[in-house]
Amino acid sequence: MTDLFDLRKDSASMEEIYSRIGKDATVQGPNLVILVTAILIACVGLNMNSVAVIIGAMLISPLMGGIVAIGYGMATYDIQFIKQSVIKLGFQVGFALIASTIYFSLTPISTPSSELIARTSPTIWDVLIALCGGIAGAVGNTRIEKSNVIPGVAIATALMPPLCTAGYGITMHSLNFFGGAIYLFFINGFFIALSSFLVFKILRVPVKDGIGREHFKRQQTFLWIIGILITIPSIYMAYQSVDANIVDSQVKKFISKEADFDTSSIVSYQFDNGILTIDLIGMPLTDTQIANLKKSMKHYSKLDNAELRIVQDNSGDSLNKEQIQQIINTKISNETKDDNGKSYKELANQYYPDYRRAINDQKVILALKEQAPALFPEITNIRGGSIASITEQQTITYQTFIVWVTVKEQITPVDAEKLKNWISQQIKIPVILYISLPNSNEQEVNGNGIE
Image 1 (cartoon, rainbow, N blue to C red):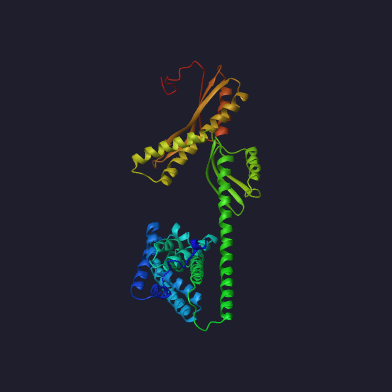
Image 2: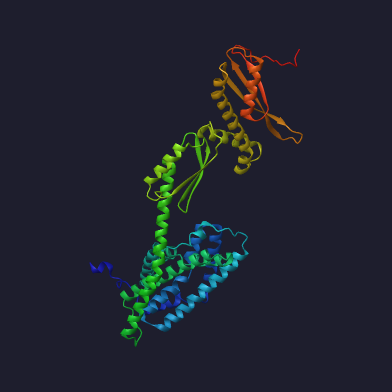
């Protein structure tokens, strides 16, 4: 059973391992050229938000060689070798920071991409990846024939992108970008070195002559302290990440399950500082509906103590959300064909006033149909809407409302004037009133301007 995990089997000679470690950690010649190209590729990939390009930078980056060399130095208790490896790695890190800072100060694209943002919040999972990647890398690097796991380890442990992200933080004077990215690089670097140290100890690389027991204990204590100090913040960040994902999941579930209404639609929502804000368009929610929403929040653990804020248009809406969507889609489709493809923002600004006017007209007619028969029993039906007029500046306005009232029997001129005054008070703009009997011919042309 022990043979299954015997790392010393098929391992290269100690001389060969030492030679490989020293060669991979060098910072001159081909390694320096590769470092420069890896920095530029990583910067471009992060800047253009290209995952494939970033992966290319990870594959060719020579940074892992210096980190593994530090792990080897710790395993052999060779202080001089450790110092040399740290100096070489420090040069590579400094060079990468300077080069990436220069790049991001020259590029015209300064908006942070999602790939840049992704490297500012390291968690405990980055620790686990670095540990596993470091073990795999050290094992692959110590075989008689180099294993093909090295490219995979280079991608998994991602050393170059965090350094370039830190350079972006320097350029943008952003402590969040710089601090988060440097912390991620430090996590990867330390735990790769630590896991390499463990592999080299298992392989029993020869220690430097003259190393006493006290030196071993001091190094062991130092590694434990540094490891704990690095891991604690990552655990906290992992907790925050998991908690944020749970909150986001519960908010989405609450919105889809509890806040689905036939006569109103959710435009947007946001959960911040214990406050869930929902923006609605359409028929305003009643106090009962809002109370039910607040009550249903108690069924979600992360929303139990949250405050609910409903931002809605209080003018009313007699259209359901399917009709609203159909109107918007039809108008956007037609306008795009006619006007060479306007943006959605331009179309929304253009059509929203017409949409709002149509909704207001429907609200007015609905209110008149509900209230007028109680005041004027002769009324059987009311129709109408605002009519367009064009000003001298060629702008369309809606300053007049036409109302067609159907009555069971003729009413007196006094009652007709009362009806018109009452409608005018409800609408608050000039009113044109037509009063007709049910059997009147609505198609004939009439008015006192005709003989």
